[in-house]
Amino acid sequence: MLYEHLSETCLAARIGEGGLSDEALGRALEAAGPSLAGLRAAREDGSLPLLGLPGRTDDLEACRPVAAAYRERFSEVVVLGTGGSSLGGQALAALASRGDGNGGAAAGGPRLHFLDNVDPQTFGALLAGLDLARTGVLAVSKSGGTAETLAQLFALLPALEGAAGAGDLAGRVTAITEPGPSPLRRLAERRGFLCLDHDPGIGGRFSVLSNVGALPAMIAGLDAVALRAGAAAVLDHTMAAADPAEAPPALGAALSVGLSGERRISQTVLMPYVDRLAVFARWYRQLWAESLGKDGMGTTPIAALGAVDQHSQLQLYLAGPRDKMFTLIRLETAGLGARVDPVLAGDESLSYLAGRTLGDLMDAMARATAETLARNGHPVRVIRLARLDEEVLGALFMHFMLETIIAADLLGVNAFDQPAVEESKVLARRYLAGEIQGGAP
Image 1 (tube, helix red, strand yellow):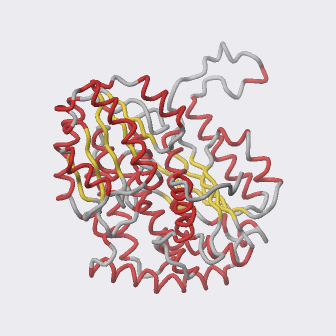
Image 2 (cartoon, one colour):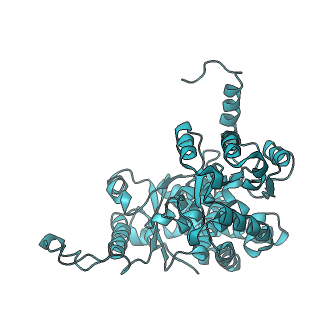
Image 3 (cartoon, one colour):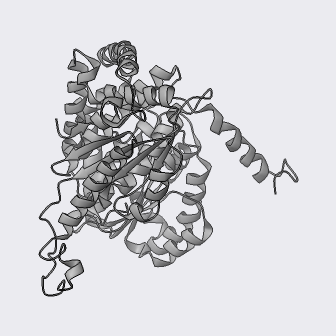
């Protein structure tokens, strides 16, 4: 395995009454057995295309010339999309940048800017700062009708055309949308934009391993084949497990659902101690919330970041309501980074820092938080990484997608739909069309 899944401190035998009992865990793991069998069958018959992606590379060939052209021609690439059409790409790009999903790419490639909201101030500031003559655009919408993405594209095209000229516009814009008629595909056909197919069988929040995530990753200089290899390793291990307890995604789902039922855990905190995984935590937040929050079921996901949030949230986590499960992601950082000069740390009260590296401090903070949570009876598991690269990140993506699908099965909800969000989308369109006057303030 490309990571260690350490979950003993979620159990009552280890942390007391705040943990899950052996009996409840056993029931949840037994219930996870049919879910694993269903996943094996879906992988075999191809009914869940997500499970076929890790073993494929053919679809990446269509992305390679696009990524190569963007890396060669452009200094800036604007990725338009929202929710699942953006967060996976952001989480991947963070691996090649300073950690926030935007900024520099590997090996001298273009800077990637993920524009996933329609705040006019943010859009205007980005537009003003771009070298439009050297800017490419990637527009992603599974349905091809996402209002935010279309509005962004319509607002950007005149400025891009003014800088590059109408004749050069076609080679500057690539769309990803599912086959069939849609506003985005019709626009691409009219204007001569390249249009890649979004697999209609893969929902946006599960699309990170597809071209939705792979193309931005390749533009950023990352290895999409290694990404899928890491995902394949987790998928293969999970599918081969004779016992759900031996499959970390199944065990994670059983712990989460078991704690929700037995200990009334209503929130789940994902807290990586790695800046480059900050956007990954936001990707997980959408995945878990939109997949499980149905029919009164689900737990509320919280994206946190260590060690920063030890100074903003840990007080509540430790002394507030006992309604949370914690997942900490630790990267082995001991000995890495700049070292504190013992002379500068000459104050006796700072002797513990003398000669230590920044990586030493990050490692100590992560270990201390996990131990403190467990000592105080809060269920906490640790996912420990020896390294962080495309292969490991692919493994993490697959782990949490499988964990989410299995948890949905245990809760009896459909992991792949999101009916509740459609009402607000329809209402927003009616406001824009002038069909509704008044309404909410």
